[in-house]
Length: 377
Image 1 (tube, rainbow, N blue to C red):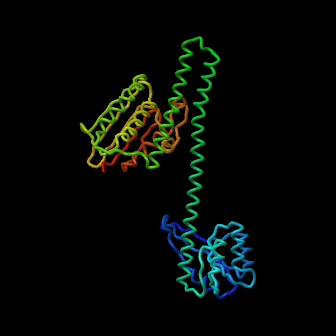
Image 2 (image 1 turned 45 degrees about the vertical axis):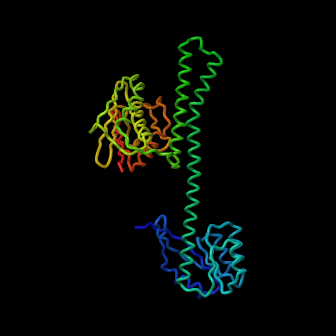
Image 3 (image 1 turned 135 degrees about the horizontal axis):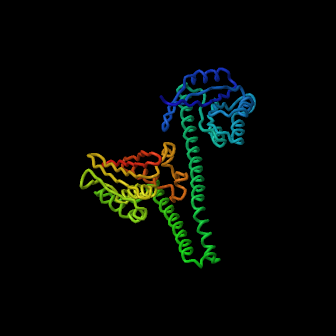
């Protein structure tokens, strides 16, 4: 059932019969918006003069105004001028028995959306109101989208600044130590300061690369080179890349597959992004001397990739937040683990290019399994 949206309409006319006729014609008015499928209905009120209309609009602005031009007091053009000066968010439709080019131009200059000459039929009235309502809903949706874009952009910049502030501060502190020579007589201390600075710089570089990947994916500007590739080969390449980090902590990485090859038409770089994120996280959030199992299942219409680790795991609440941008699970176990918080978001967007999805099954202190399905066609 379509969600119902109600708009308020004010009919301003000094003829009671005209006001009653409009209310009767619009009593059962409804329309469905094109983009959202909302069912729009009207709440109709009336004013017998321009002065009364202004008083009502001071209390509550209507969404649509049907405005007679020639009335006993101030004219409809005067009311339009007041609406324009007060920047009310509404659609105004001028109705008058004295139609002229001059009146139409004057009304349009004051912000009138439409011009409806008397006499008009109920059908003509409904067409005009329907067009005004559709335009108003679309306009407000566009404004809301623009506000949301600004909000997201502000949030993005704020989070980015926060993510860069910590490593920049750490590097700055290390550089001051090097400059002032504090403790630098000890080669081990000197090497540790340099190494920590390089680690922080590596994290910043990873953040920048992840941001570039995310931007290219969302803008559709990333050039894709599709060809038949062996997913198992991509898995082995990624395992080889992550092996040094795994070996340092005694973590083993194994690969199992239902076939000798698992071929899919894809961009090799995109498949590498998926494996690099899966295996990197499985190593990063694992325990020393733990294990990572990579399983590739080749099915007729899709390929399923599952990566299981013996790591710290996550609670259900943590899993629910996992795929947001710049989201990293922060607790005592992850305090010293660096990351951009973008990898899983990028992986999910990459999987969606293949009509795929990413799911997670995790148990605290036991490990996690990330499963990615990719459609072959």
